Image 1 (cartoon, rainbow, N blue to C red):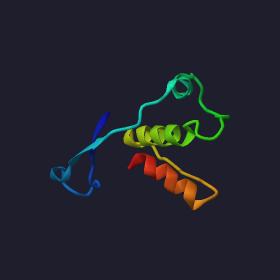
Image 2 (image 1 turned 30 degrees about the vertical axis):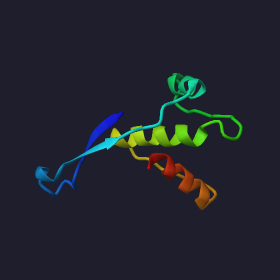
Image 3 (image 1 turned 90 degrees about the vertical axis):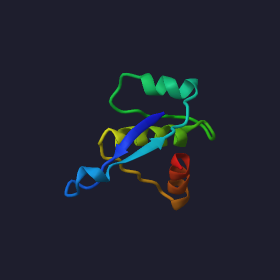
Length: 88
């Protein structure tokens, strides 16, 4: 569970902060192994229904909440929709 404050644009006053609770999916053992790997880049070679989208959406959400930029690139809108559905 990650609890974060959604910040208003810097031109607005701090009274506009809103508390947001985000519940991220739990990782299964293979995803945990990838998450703990001490590497800069991760290449995941896995079959269908192995949790790649779930892992990617969870990782992107955690980076975003730390103030990092997140770019999602996909060959189809269906894949983009699947990604965002994991976060909703």
